[in-house]
Image (cartoon, rainbow, N blue to C red; front, side, top):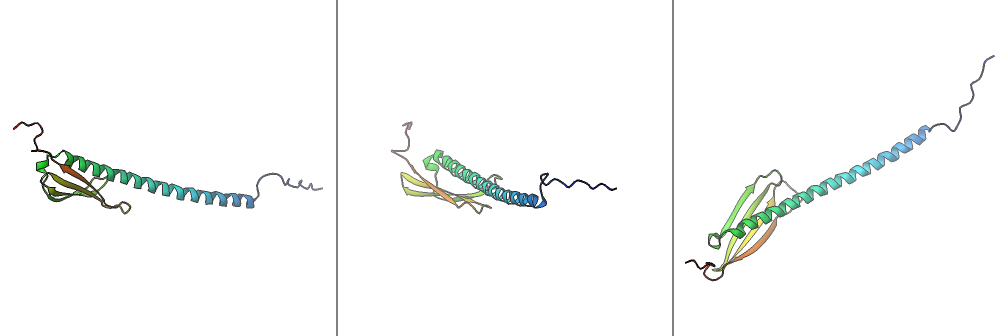
Length: 137
């Protein structure tokens, strides 16, 4: 006599269809998360570039804010800065408003960055009296 094996119990394990459905759902969720992470990384890069651009403008304005008034010569000067963090071109334009006032405009144009636009900021430098606040002469 041959013994017949007992039928398999229907409650043990997952079916192939259940595994395929769960893998499909997991794949869709992973792709969605990857897309979100890519967008977040791009936004973080843009924010970092904007912070570098703001620092470049402030640094240039600070330099021209401490230059003696008489040494501010009217004209435009452009310099290409090849900083690996933020490569850009800095243009400074000095305009004589009158004998006691000058406008200093700093324009920062990012190079190699399609996200940021050029930024310009102007300060007005003035001198009062005869330009000698300590009256040493």
